[in-house]
Length: 480
Ligand SMILES: Nc1ncnc2c1ncn2[C@@H]1O[C@H](COP(=O)(O)OP(=O)(O)OP(=O)(O)O)[C@@H](O)[C@H]1O
Ligand SMILES: O=P(O)(O)OC[C@H]1O[C@H](OP(=O)(O)OP(=O)(O)O)[C@H](O)[C@@H]1O
Ligand SMILES: O=C(O)c1cccnc1
Image (cartoon, rainbow, N blue to C red):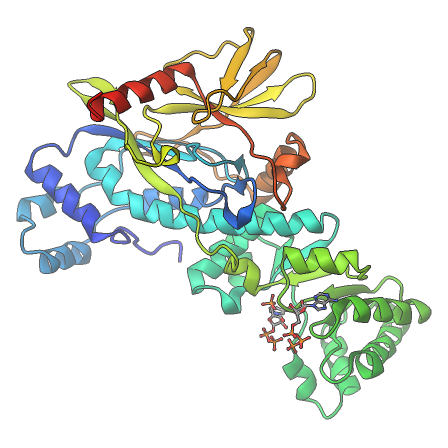
């Protein structure tokens, strides 16, 4: 999966534009594009950036091989042979800055910024959005689930319902970035070093003439990792009692039953009853795993009912981001180089929220030194110098009367150089590093910005210079 050639994983219109630029001699002009999204998914207040590793692997492998060129030749008779020749030896030569995976991010801030020839910038838009939108969505969903069960173990079980293999694999990784602990997908475990976990299915019990024999056979085979699915016939009348028998047999062998899994029925009631039965049998160390169409809402609700569940297996609703199945991340040009000079560009819309913010930007997280909490994110032009020793006046870019002044702050720059003129300069972070970084990030935000339900809007503000440039360009293009 890592080594497939994804160069043609793009929309045809990108190659048409590359061709039109090449034909008109404009293909070498340098442009800056930025990836950002406009609206938080799941009705929440933030997203967790994920997908960058996939983006970097993709940029590394980009090349048109002979079969790609033959396909282009066959698909479009207008493409000149000389254009295909130009593609033959091409490699991505751009410079990329990006926020780290695991960063808590907000609408309208650049997550990835690419400076390259227009020729290359066009080709890569589709794939970059494809990877970033999906993985960011899943990491965010996972993080919402983590919020309601911060001290429990979270298992990603979604592969069978994922929108095909890449989604299952990279989705499993994104779930870990968002705070999950393990996946059931063995290939994801192998590819990304994610811990793998598994219990067994109803089929294993149905295959035996009775449940107890099935449990014994399973425990004999995997004595160090026994978690028994107890709901095939009757959870409290046979599943849990049989699991207790096996738990006792394991104790005699110096082993322990690790868990039981509930997969149907009233999970609150069944978990409380099962807990009592296990405890009464001296098996208070046995964990209770639950699965069955779970998400942050059901888990939150089950907890409020006092459910005694230690481990949550979450599949369908996580891996498909069921209640918010797409993130609307976009890729927009913000600056262009003409005769050696960079010029800002704008996209105007009747909807003020959709007017783009021109200029290649720097993205700062403004952290109050006294409270240690993030006050706002702040965008400046790339050339601006932000003096942390002065007071900083922040104002909302659309509702400009919303203002605040910050003093004694730290400005953490979030966009890091990851690709420099065609060379990856970003060492892949381990998933543990990404997870730790995400957890550290969570601690600097006031809870009201991150809560799942009706969060407060976190300020993402722009500098006076960016605001002025934006207004000048609006005036210029609207003829005022
Ligand atoms: N105590 C509870 N409070 C709220 N929701 C619950 C509770 N117990 C289970 N649920 C959820 O209710 C839904 C029950 O779904 P459904 O009726 O399809 O399952 P079931 O009949 O128990 O089992 P099966 O999967 O075999 O059909 C699941 O999403 C489950 O997570
Ligand atoms: O419910 P999810 O969050 O997707 O978690 C994964 C589900 O996959 C398995 O069952 P499967 O869905 O194959 O069959 P079932 O619905 O009959 O249990 C497992 O028993 C879980 O219920
Ligand atoms: O290990 C499990 O229990 C499991 C794995 C995938 C899907 N459902 C359950």
